[in-house]
Amino acid sequence: MSPTLALTGSNLCGDAAFSAALAVDGDVAVRSVPRGERGDLVKLCHELCEARAVAPTELRRLVVDVGPGSYTGLRVAVTFVRVLQQFAGVEVEGVCSLAVLARHAAPVADAPVRTLLDARRGRLHTAVHAHIDGQTRAREAPRAAPVEEVLGALGAREVVVAPATLAARLREERGIECVAASGLTAAGLLTDGLPRFSADAASLEPRYLMASYAES
Image (cartoon, rainbow, N blue to C red):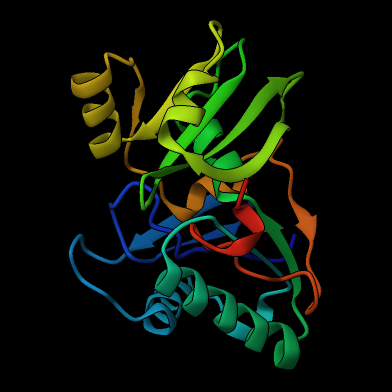
């Protein structure tokens, strides 16, 4: 199987501005920008390929999360992928960041998993996924809505997942128990069972936290 490169710039958990993972013969190597640094995604990928003795021309498949998440990170990552898609002829697959987060933070949940992100301006970005027969499936499309509306609609059986900072705030201010998500890297994009989609130039669009597509 040809080497597969996965990239993420969504920085959902605040761990790293960019992360890259390279899968070669079933073995996955990961590199991330140190916390608090902006980093260089191109350099990160080059160093990862160099460490695994993989030439960029050997890459035939690339996976990228399309958001929601960091505006700058998503823009840089998606633009980089578009360039590779245009000039290197790689097969590109996209995946929703919130599906990755749900699988990463609550992989064995037998109830719906609701992910929450701070969309600012008094809103939360939310989606619901379920793990069924090893597959993570969307139950509610990503959207941004007022905090009170989102919290008021939480289901009794839902497992709530949020980045550690938001999870702590919801617990302290609202008494809502959340799974605190951290440590998410690009390796999570390669997990079996995620709802990835084949992405051409038209469909490879970043989904920003406060973009119009997400308005309720």
